[in-house]
Length: 238
Image 1 (cartoon, rainbow, N blue to C red):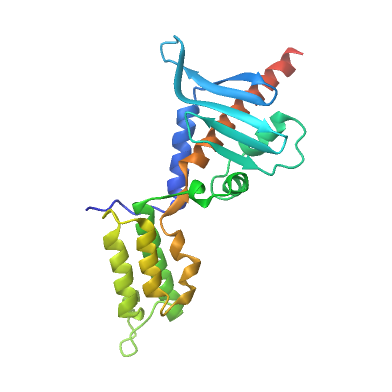
Image 2 (image 1 turned 90 degrees about the horizontal axis):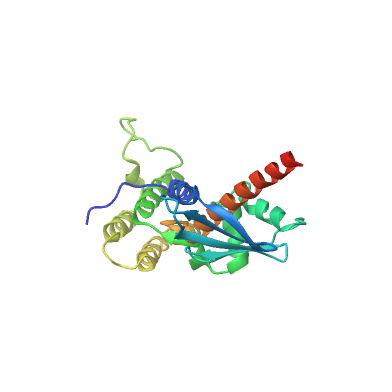
């Protein structure tokens, strides 16, 4: 099976966030009750509401946000210092960060790692090649040179045959239908015999922030934009 072009997880997540923002860009908001809103968009012909990405957003106890609807459910928890529901929305919506902060608060809210991360073959391919090169650099201390000629040699040559075969085997298995966890476990089993520290990164190969978290953040961001605009209009009217 032909593999896709390698892409790093940070870029993959950013692309997903931009798509989510486009999917919510026409959404309007409606207050259901204190701290409870829905965001939705009208059909392009202006007749009625489109159910695509229809989303409920609820502030819970001024410390957490629950998001669900025509996207996967997600909870962000451990907001401190906010006084109003709108301030809690601003906590996540002002600068949505799917790479660290937003993901961290989703972890507190939901606890399950399998809800926070997704796996992608293109990201895994990038990670495998990056870690392979990094491991070789760590072993050699620099780009290795031939002792006789002084010329730079292929960086991969500092790795053992077992190590090279392990990385090659993992690449071949991507897209084959084999479960990603089995691919990573096999890679760990082979590498750990020589490089036990590989446990620090091997099981994160191919991971990026899940659409569950990213779309929830984008929905909260959209609501924050709408609430901020509404607040500005009220201030001007006053």
